[in-house]
Each structure stands twice: as C-alpha cells, then as structure tokens.
Amino acid sequence: MNSPLQFDMQENQISYPTIGELVREIFNASGLLASKSSKDAFLSSSQKKSIQTKIKRLADESSKIEGKLKELGIQFSALLEGINIDEKVRNVVIACVDEVLLVYKSVLNSDGTYTSKRESMKYFLEHFLIGRIVFSLHKNYLKFNLPDLRSDVPNVKLWILPAFDSQKILWPLANAWKQIYSQLGVSQSYFHYPDKKHEDLQAIRNLENAQHWSSKGQLPSISALYDNFDYSVELLKRTCNKQLSANFRSERLKSFKLMLFIARVATYLFQRIEASFGREYLESIIKQIMGASARLSRINQGLAKDIEIIRSQNYLIRQADIDSLHFSMVDNFWEDYSNRVLVGSETLQELIEEKIFDGLSDFEVKRIVIFCLGSLAAQEVLANKSYQSIDFDKEPNRKKKDFFELLHEGFNLRKSPPSISDIEAYERELESRDLKNALLWLSEWCYANFYYDKKDFLESHVHYEKAFNHAKYCAGENQYSLVNQYIESCAKVHNRKAMKKAIAWAHYMGIEVRLIRNFDDPESEESIDFIYEIMGNHDYHSFPR
Image (cartoon, rainbow, N blue to C red; front, side):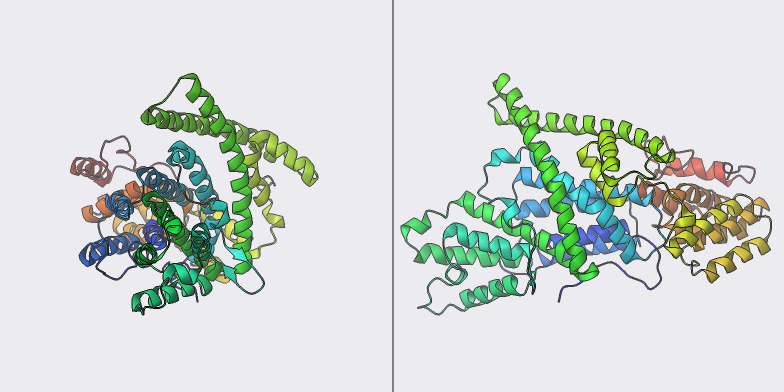
C-alpha cells in the first residue's frame, strides 16, 4: 500500500508544511537516498547519513538554517551528476526544483491558512505546485536546449503519466519498463533472465523485483533500479544475437536509465497524491497536467520555430552559440509573457471589483478572461473561478466564513486592544467557532500589543514569542509585521540569541527585516549589532499597527 505525503501531521496543527519538509519530499521522490549500501552504490553510508541529517534539521528548523537550503541544493545536483545525468538534464531538474521552492515561499508569504497541513498541502498542490512543475519542465526543456541532445528516450507522453482502468493504476515506472522492453523487442522475462538454462539467482531476483515494480507498484531506490538494469543488460549482451546487441549503444542505455529515473520520480509523486487524497483526486490532477501540457507544447512549438529561424539567419553552428540562443530567447519570451499577464491581471482585477462577471454566461466569462490574460494564464483563473467577486455573506463553507470574519475582527482588536477582557472575549469567540488553533497567533498578537502599549516589554515578549511561533507557515502576508515586531521585542528584553534566530528565519523565508533590509548581509554580526542597539532602546517604537 502506498504511503501518503511524508509531512509531520501533528494533530490539530494549522499550517503549511515547512520548506524543509518539502525539500525532504523532493529527495524522497528522487530515490537517491533510499538505497541500502551495495558494491555499486554511488553514495557511501556516511554521505547518505550526513545528507539525511541536514534534511531533518532543515525540516525541523532545529538548528542554523541559513545556507542549509543552498548546501542541500548543491548536494542534490552532485547526486544527479553521480548517477550520470547529463548536464543539460540536470539544469532542467535543478531549475524546476528552484522554481517550485520560489513559488512555495511566495505562497507562504501571501496565502494564510486555517486548515491542517494535509489540506493546506492539497491546496498548494492543486493551485500552484502541479502547474508550476508542468510549466517549468516545458520552459526549461527548450531553454536548456534538450532537443539537441537527440536522446533515445521515447515520447515522454507515452509513459510519464499513470494509466487507469477499473481495477488498478499502471504507474509511470511500469510504463517506462514496458517501453524499454518494447524498444529492444524482448519480453520482461527475457530482458531480466535471458538464459534460463543456467540458474542465476541474481537474474531470478531481478525478474521478480521487476514484476513487483510493474504489477504491485512497488517503488525501488535508484540504486536498485540501476543495478537491476545494468546486470540484466550484461546478461543480454552475453546471450543475445548480433541484431539485438546492436541496440546496446552506450548513449541508448544512458537514455533508458534516464527514463527510469524520471519515471521513478513521477511514480513517487503520483502514488503519494493517490494515497493522501484518493484516486478520483489523482485523476483530476492528471487531467490538469494533460491540459496544461497541451497548451505549453503548442507554445514551445511556435517558439522553437522562431529560434530555428534566428539560428539559420545567423548561421550558428557552434553548440555553445546555439545553446546561448535558446537560453536567451526562451528567457525573453517568458519575461515578455509575464509582463503582459501582469498588465492583463490589473485589468481583470478592475473588472472583478466592478462585478462585471455577475450574471454572464460561462462562454462570455471565458472570452473576457482569455482576452485579459491569454489562454495559458486564463485556465487557472477559470478553473478556480477567481473572477468571481467575494461575498462572505454568501460563502457556503461555514468555517471559511467564520475564519475571515474573526480574522477581520482580530485585526481590528490588534491595532489598539482596549482591555484584557476584550481579548479574552475574542478568545472565547474563537473557541466557540472551533477556530482557536487557526487564529491562536492573532489572539496572542493582541495580548502582545496590549502589553507593549503599556510598556510592559517582558510580558509583551512572552506573547510575541507565542504569536511568532504559531504564525509560522500559516499567517501568510501578516508574517511580515509580526516577525518584525517579534524581532523588536527580542531586542527590548535583551534576548540577542532569539533575535538572531528570528532574523535568520525571516531571511530564509524572504521576509524583509526593517532597518537592515538593504544591508548586504542581514545576518552578519554588524547587522545584528545595528538593529539590536536601535530596537533595544525603549523609546524606539515599531511602525503604526
């Protein structure tokens, strides 16, 4: 049975997963750390343990986090190189990972949540993650000029997505193996155990493993996959005829192993989605991928023709010049596209505020949204019905309605809390509507501001600290103000260590810290000294709330 997404699902915890937890899932998907040590392992036990320790610390945020993410990014790239992934392909993979993390940070700093980690991740997956992965892979495929690799990998669309029937799901890894067997013109049994006249225990195990991977959806490590493939190919070379042996060019074998790696990553992702949210949800995600892929493929085809025209007109022959042309033209195309969407989004927002879509047919809405954004960007808006004006009085989701109502009430109270009894009344209202955990950070923030206004900085710090810790990964755009007030509070109670950790976390999250936002290194001792001295002055007060 497949495992769900591997996030720390503490009961009643309201938040998105931490960035470190997402990084851990990326490593898990790769299969690069899942192997037991073997004579052919590309990673020693000590190296593997070191990386796993760094991932755990990043996920738990239990130690210094500055630089840890970059370190793991470098090590991830080195692992890809260790399994002989071509440099251009590595660039595409790393670019995709970087873009996913960038989008995730943006969502964390803008979209708050009132749901569990599981539901918050589901929201991110459906509205941001899948679309970004599909977009990034299509964009960077052309940007890093993968077409010129002339790889022997069969059409990705034939094997990269799960296939469904009434009884089971055929996962990408099984599809990839089927493509390899088909390309070589052999059966699964013959590929893994070609000479059954001679007993070969390793070949028998390889065949059994391949059958389990195909029929039961079991997910091996990359080491196990590659060991099986390499051993089977060596057996085939010794036993097959000359016609079959002609298929064993080194570049073709390398392409097959790349297929297995990509299929392993895809299988991990889709299996975790199915285990976490069900088959019906997975099928909806696959439809979303197919639609986005079709639209992006059409864009890529047109862009590739434009690149070829420039390439021919300038008589480019050197591969470096051709690759540079791809890189710059693709970058320029998507930068121009982003600017057009930004302008169109402003127009669309004005139309939404004017409630122009109320009462229009779906066809009329679609025409207007596509006119503003173009067909690619319009699809997400149309799918999520983001063009509809928000009226919380008509919101059918009672908890969502209550959340935004009490969020607004809490913000008003936070600005200038009149008394402790008012905050206590607000807490009772949160409790009665089952939103205490979701907005605990806001009620604590109200207490903190109350005591801050009374110049009781020790008591206010207790509440700022609670608010800061509860707001992590759930308060969205409000984290900026809260983090900055917490940093000031640390300075006022002379807790330099806590202040340094808060500044490091803000820097890690991409949240600006007042007074040092333009410093070259906000985490340097010079920066810390500067802000510690100014904010520690009891006559210094934070910006108006």
